[in-house]
Amino acid sequence: MNEAALDSSPSRFGGLSSFLRQQWATIGLVLANLIVYVWMGASGVSWTEPDPEQLVSWGANLAPFTLSGDSWRLLSSMFVHGGAMHLLLNMYMLLLIGPLAQKRFGGVGFLAIYLSAGLAAGLVSAWWYGTHPVTNLLMQSSIRLVASVGASGALMGLAGALCVAGLSDADMGGSQGKALAQVVLLNLGMGFMVSGVDQACHIGGLLAGLPLGVLGWLDRLKRRPLQRLLMFVALTGAAGLGAHQASLALGSEDLSELAAQLRQQQAAQPTSP
Image 1 (cartoon, rainbow, N blue to C red):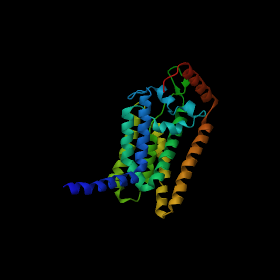
Image 2: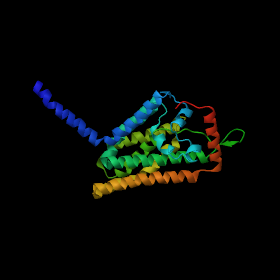
Image 3: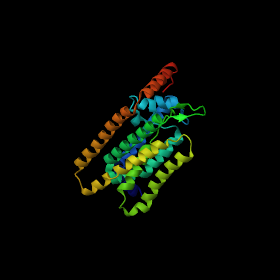
Image 4: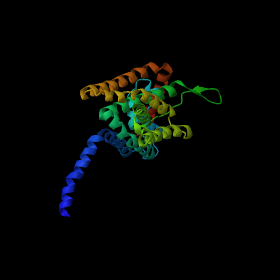
């Protein structure tokens, strides 16, 4: 029995090594989100219900800031979460469809689509809240300040891409189809039924992911790995540059003035990050 145990150890380590190679992108994203969450908590941010001011200081997508020069928030907001339950729910969905995405698009392709769709989702959210003021009972219009955070926009984009890429797959009606339906319906359902959920981000991510799913068909043309790598790197770069330029184009003097006022309030009442 000792010999059997010794013989199985390399197999177990080999299996772990193979799993890490196959799912490195999913594992990397999960770890990145966990690291940010722990870092925030260790710095004094509430582990369960962070204040909006705290989320903004850590890079939340706030329309007046994002559309007034802080386009980096489109990226940072993907890795910031509003408490433990928010994080766990998104990581559950990431673990649900991440392996499917890495199998279909490869690790680099998975990350390219995830980040590109997440940037687009954040941009749609900033556009919606930054250009659609709400009117109160006194018929006064004002911008609704929403600190949008979380990976759900990127996840919706990933789900949309997988739906298109897998149109001809026999298992789309099986486990893969159920996983994608769970992610899409859960996010959209929560957006309609739960207050405080950024539905604009969810819908924006889903719509951005649909055309990106065509990249899954290109893999079937058996392109060379270097060509695929360059294609996905170019996609991510174009998405980042496009999101930055679009955020500047969507800005306005009113948003810039509001952003300046908010920054003055932050300076007068600093919050611990």
